[in-house]
Length: 435
Image (cartoon, rainbow, N blue to C red):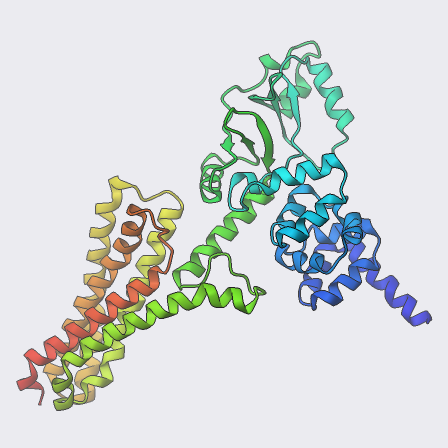
């Protein structure tokens, strides 16, 4: 029994001193075991750990709790984190949890839950420090002291009597000013804010461009609703980047490593069917040259070389262009330059790689025309690959689609079709010299 109590003490100490590491440890456990561990901790320590838990994992744990068991956690977890967890629960379960909360806490969570997670409203924290513009510096400082905020902050927002955002005030300016000075005369009136419905990607772009530590969120009438903290902006930027990577390869942007099999299947299977259809398209191109391949069987050896090199070349361009789109670097003024630059790069790379491939083909088969055929095909395919890698995401954005959504699948189709067609086409043209 003494060993058991000692191990319990060790676990509690670990969770108390290292909540972020403890959360990572919980995420790899079955959620039933994670739930049992959290219930054996004090509500303060457990809630601190929940702050660092992946919201999807936390929702699985909460789904196994009774509303009464969850209440002690919900009272201590920040409203934003709690909303991220509750949004993953079925509507009925979510309502059960909300009903056991105090009215003010429930209203706060219900407000946050009205905004989708990928919007500014879904990212914001409601606990924003706002001061009336009618206050003096002395009164403003006293109000801030009364709040007793534990989290560090660098700005306070200034509002009117209807809670409409009027300006922002730096703490340095506030502390150094004369106590009798009205804060309205100190505040910066040109404050940048985002409507609650703004897409998360746009919020990240704006914050990155302005280099803001925080971002105020307002409603349609400029009433201050909450604030997006720097850590939430960083988290959103990481999620946007990871979503784009997943979408490029046909996985769901909101899919996670611990997502249920049914969810992952629903997200991936449609794009696998698209990929299958494009693979048959590429195969049909090869079928058109079946007689040439039957006559010169060595061609089959080099088919994947041409297609693969084109795919890799296009993927390089695709990655650079999608990054440029995400960072707002690619607008209408530079689109033509980007496409021409990538075309030139594709031709130059194609010439160099084509010469190397031609030399290898010649040494392998002892026929210089074989090297000529594969060298020409490599130049054509790599030039088309770079242009396609640039144009596909640009075209997708122009028609209102997500540029990252399965761009690689479309690109692979283009490079396979052009690679096979060019290689086998040149081979057919020069076939009397290849046999």
